[in-house]
Length: 479
Ligand code: SF4
Image 1 (tube, rainbow, N blue to C red):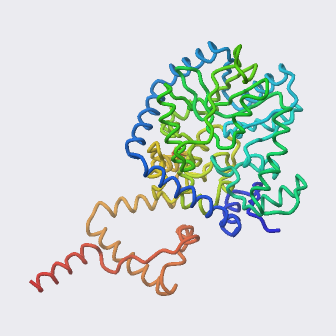
Image 2 (image 1 turned 45 degrees about the vertical axis):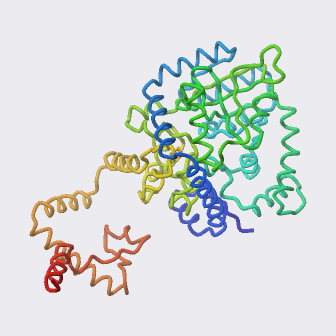
Image 3 (image 1 turned 30 degrees about the vertical axis):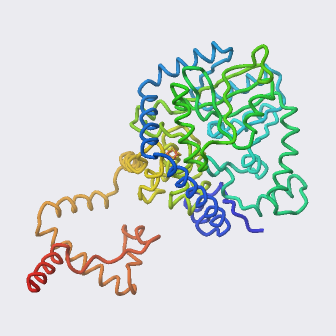
């Protein structure tokens, strides 16, 4: 059966080519991203969106300005609440810390709520190597765990799969009778996962935001699995990127509103689970042990390198849903835990095991749709251009690039050479376009990559200045 999956072992260019020719993937992406983008527009349109975006931006900038103090405040509060705080510099540190927590607590089985930070550091694989059973409990994550795939979207991990694909996975892995009814498919998953929740000794989740003033870790979900992960097992571990901070409870609800409206187009999520530490005497539920693991993995360097603006990201996924590149190739073509425009900025900066990471900043048309959709007004196109500059500086410009730039610079210094070059370019491009029957479909030598994936219209026969003069002369005649 043909599927919407992309072979992740292929090199970047081949993955992109395969994605572009995968009709099933296109159907799945069109359906989901179109729906989510439309819901976001409606939900943000129902509030004073410019004001909300400006407030969230201001708050996140404040977080970055007072980052060390807020992290210390968070640690103090979590500890005062009876929890344990751990600091992980790199992925290996985080893996070691969580495995040690599990060993000390004699854990055999772990249930997990959705977490991009744990995907980033391959925590599941580390826990499995340590002999633990790990079960993803977000429905999308559970499906891709069964399929042996990583997530392809930061909010909707299984966005690349159609219901037909998911039914086939459930038939193969869970002996589900043939059906395409989403209710039945969900019911099968619910039956399996409930048993896992009741027998797991440890729950692990990510963290949408942690409140520094109270030491509270918040997870935003629609399925209830986050609530069960954080309350049923006797040990609860939260894995959080260092930047997922908000100073106050008021700020938490500001971010919550922007997140729900921008990601799924909801006024509020079905669940907002807030954990401030282990169960206290008299509490009806909650874990006996609570651990917060704070992950750096390159985030502090990101700020120092000038890409701190990307740390304001609240992982809503809106930029992916509007990106014309993401909508064509999907998340797996990027080859990174984080895909789409924000992924193309984060992936080259934090410490990920990603090949071809320097290609990702070029996976953008720089149209600016991501910046316009972002609830934090993050200027992703600016950072993508700066990352391209970094690549050129690191690799060095080619001889052709240097010669072209020197020629361009000379040409721009003299009006006559600028006009002569324009005339020459117009003549040559129009001759070539006529041979190609319309637009330029082939350019020679080092220019050929330009036309490898797009046609180029020929230059105008007359310059703007000439056209302006002709129009003025025509107008004078009429008057
Ligand atoms: S960059 Fe903006 S739009 Fe993209 S995921 Fe982050 S907050 Fe959302």
